[in-house]
Amino acid sequence: MNFDINTLVYILEITVGGLLVGIGVHFVPVGGAPAAMAQATGIGTGTVQLAAGSGLTGLLSAGLMMSVTDNIWLIIATGAVGAMIMIDATMLTGSWIYAYAVGTPFASAKVNYDPFTGFSQPPYIGPGTVGQGIPTVCYVSGTIGAAMGGIGGAMIYYPLVQVNNNPAMSAIFAIGIFLVSAVLASWNIQGTIEGFHDPKFKKWPGAFKACAVASIILAIVAVVITPIGGV
Amino acid sequence: MTVGGGAAGAPQAIDPKKIRLYGLVGSVLGIYIAYLLNAATGTNVFSLVGAVAAIFGVVWGANAVRRVCAYGIGTGVPSIGMLALGMGVVAVLFGLNLAEQIGLGILGPIIALVYSMVFGFIIGTIANKVIKFNIPIMEEGLTDLSGAGTMAILGWSFAVSGSLAYNDMVSSVINTGFLAIIFICGGLAILHPFNANLGPDEKQDRTLVNAVMVGGMATIATGVCSILTLGLAAGVLQILVGFAIWYYFYVWFFRLVKRDAAAVVGTGMLPPSVL
Image 1 (cartoon, rainbow over the protein chains, first blue to last red):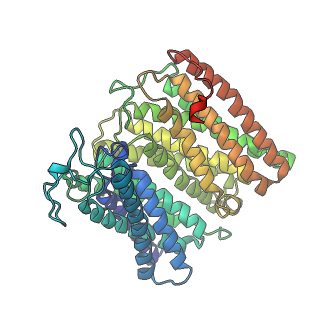
Image 2 (tube, each protein chain N blue to C red):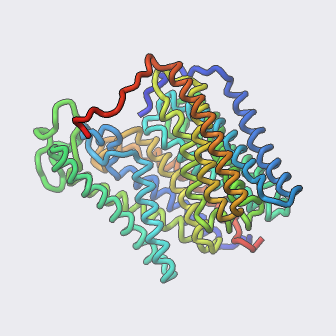
């Protein structure tokens, strides 16, 4: 490898990408197993699955755009839009099931009034549950989180392709970095979160510090790798 | 949600230090034996020894998962398995590439293992100090998991590529996309045993036998992949060995389930009214 100013920029881009993934996870309304039984607000699966799903869709769409252009802004925007579509589609179809199959009203247990619609929430929370479904505030929060995850994924993927010229290897490497950041962030959340209005959201500096250390180490390792045949 | 075990740590019949030693020595030796046998005979039939080496790593990792997750990590067992494989895949690529760059390609697995265990220790320290998990064995557990994830990916990658050279590994495992299969099947082998067996009656031997069983199934999957990369003979042999491992340990696992269950009863066929 040859070390120059570009290498430093690549390390910085990968680190920022890892940080965006870590913070973005805090925005996604993760309900886990309780939400799958409509006893908590959010999407009924774990943080890692959601983060990996949105991140991989972001990677795929960023990779597709990268086969057409080298413009980093277009690639990052495509990654963000891909991840947003994935999370939004998941939340929308999940909402249909909560509304028409399970038959629950959507209500957040963390705010008294939905900041976007202004609707009162507490009367609709079922006894013994902590909210149900995906209310508007969670939907908006999830979309923001997916955008950050997608931008993060694209910002990890772009410099990797510049370093090793191999989209397949860059993708799998980006998934590795993505998973480390997402798991650290989900450990920081400890279970379920509703979005930026949840009191747990204030814990994000912990994930910021953790993902910063992990991403810098992974970024330094990533830029050392040489392309195939270039050894 | 992890509920099993409580804060006292998981009960264990086999000492974790012993399992770590078996896992480390078994996986590293296995990969080198496979490499030497392939090189000495000039064939790639012995690549399946790499898959057996990966199963040693899997048992090591599954034991680390049950030790850490018995404390309750709050996000479900799969997250820690995905973290192990995420750290592993970075370590494998880095180790193999760095070894080629310094001109000692054969040292790739050692470099990958050392790097991954150091990185796992750092992540474990972060988890305890920054995220404030306060799990006493977190550093140790993540060091083990990171190393186990690396050896699992490396072992099965060798079983598919039949070579330790970085270029062969990239062209036959990564560019073909087979690494995704290894990633998920290897991840399942490490995370699934504790996820399936957790609870107050979780027993170490049942969990670890389950790990080898899932490892056998992953070997069947890599065998299918290696038909394309290594040829029909090596691939089919690997599928057969994977099937034999799966069958033997499935029978063993079922015996342990019957031992630990209050009762095992047949429900019979579905009643005619529901068909």
